[in-house]
Length: 289
Image 1 (cartoon, rainbow, N blue to C red):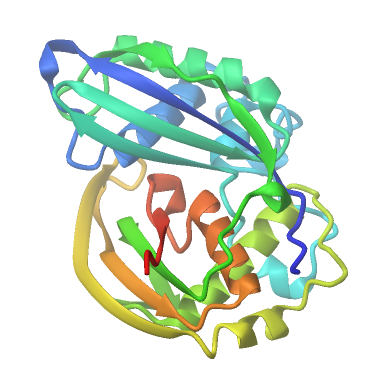
Image 2 (cartoon, helix red, strand yellow; image 1 turned 30 degrees about the vertical axis):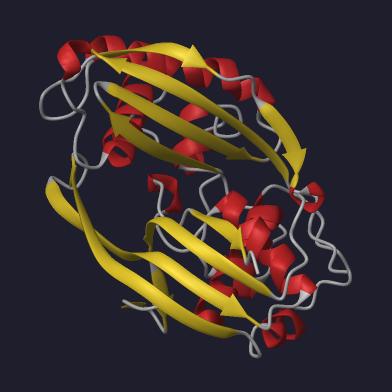
């Protein structure tokens, strides 16, 4: 059986009650995330004119942790060319004046939990988005801590992948608008590896990227997908930015045990670009036959 890296994961959920039932935006993850970054940079940064990479506080600052994490000194040349993965994701559901947030931290960041919730609460008092929507945190779940190599996974030859938030995959630098099993697998394997390395988690000696990728070559897929576009306004870039992806259902057959385990890991960490904005979230559905 495949041994995954022992990447620490902290997951919790929050319920935000919006003032006067005013929606945050059509892309709440981006609006809340952007507002939180703007708040932390403006209210808690001691050296606002200094880039995070040159700041002595980078390894202890909540803003740097969430939005500009430090590079790992011992990372290899090939890995250094890939973007540093953000050590958290945020997924939101909006309904009747309430926003359900699911937050996932990667790494040993339990000490950052209280400052994060406190900053989000202060942001709610200020208001966010074009309508300056105010909110309060009315509910918070008990945080759950676990390791990536401890997750349970199905042992089935036939599984479904229910992609419920846009998944953005790239091939040779270009966005693809359809499911490609090998591109998905390559993206998933790289994300697991980079998250682990940047959180100083040892990669198991049995980890072999090419052999694991080969296991996906025999998988047979059938898709029913829709393309999606989400737009956000970037305060820093002073522009409207578009984020594209696809969602829907992918039926996978001839799935090995290792592939099932990797698919289950991807359901926890998200796959593809813009995972910090809630992209690439999916559930696994077992064949009931």
